[in-house]
Image 1 (cartoon, helix red, strand yellow):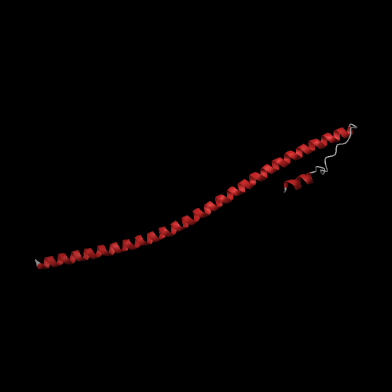
Image 2 (cartoon, helix red, strand yellow; image 1 turned 60 degrees about the vertical axis):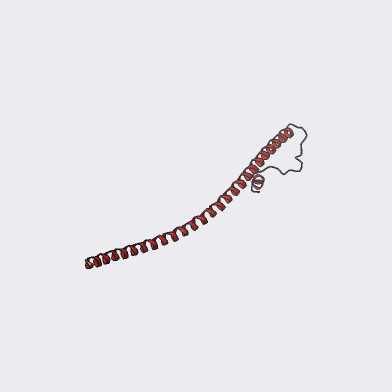
Length: 119
């Protein structure tokens, strides 16, 4: 009977030892996974910050583009008005009427329009 108890004790000790080894391996694996998750979370936070800065930059570029677009529309309207005024001045000058001076404005050419638009 004592031998049976001894063998049962040895078997249970062996099983306990196996379970401890398995638990240690699982804890180490869990620790490695936790470290990996923390590193990934740091990467994600860095990417979020970078995304926010990129979104701000895109918004600034969009605003600048909208401002330039509005300025281009304004300059185009002014150019069309000047062209109409220039045509009417030419037509009245051809008809023998007095010439209207354009208050020191240079003549409207493609080059002058291009230089105005590039500003």
